[in-house]
Image (cartoon, rainbow, N blue to C red; front, side, top):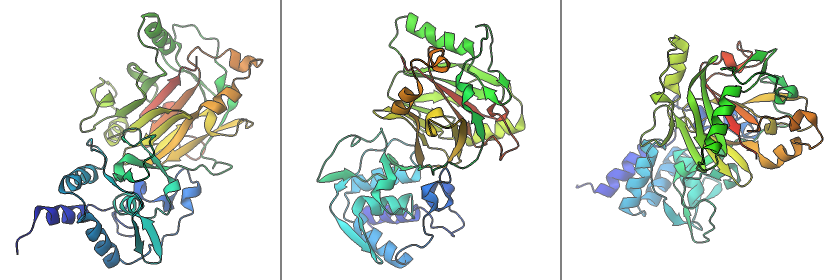
Length: 376
């Protein structure tokens, strides 16, 4: 019996499905039951509706109805785990399928099969900026490419005590512009004035105004120059097929620490920064968790800042414009004395810091980013 190309694509796609929990291959990026930021996604049942045979039969029947070119695009996205650019997979949005006692829409079923087996509802998802369907509403067709979506990282209230930092970190110290690196005192980190002057030069040169600049650090040493961001979306990565953005692998580093080199190699696809209407979102594209500290991730009335853990495949709104405006009280000396580039967000790859870790300050983390927002 001759096997068609279509049936071969279907079999390869089924072999590339996301592993169910307990298979021994499960990645934390595909399962919310291990929690994201230890938040609402942690409250997901480990049970999976329907049997493996039912899921396989249903998936095969759906994939066999998809055009061959669409199957090829889907396979490219799934096998590269989102690393390769892939087009939208536009399919009917109103086709429902029953699996066990549950009924799922066609997009939701494909997202479950190829990314998140524990996914229950579309409200847990966020469409990525790279998707052509981003910001558009089509009642008939919807993009079903599972790597054009991310899982929303829901923070619990109050957030978990990964680490606590005083809000006073927002008050810049009186340090001359010649200081080349960040300074720390009692766990309070400040942006390097040299970096801020670098970004100001970009504006004075007549170039298009940036909305943020990114600094890459290895422990206490900044590696490379500041990266000015003008486009709405930026990929920050170490090794990404067809990568376009801030490639950390191209930076020259003299750090010989084995831990730094090990963590650097795990950055992989890295993260995606996206400026959207409601704020700046961070999408974890790597295979390992990232850790984020931001003033707008916590209660504005809180005197402490927390470090939040974001698993692979999840997105979090790292900088909220509305909350930032409420923090910048016009009569508050603490905020009127802000550096001209405004707030910062700190992101550490793989390794966390704070009370629950051996590293108390982010400058002890092997590889980390400082994102400095231009709020003017």
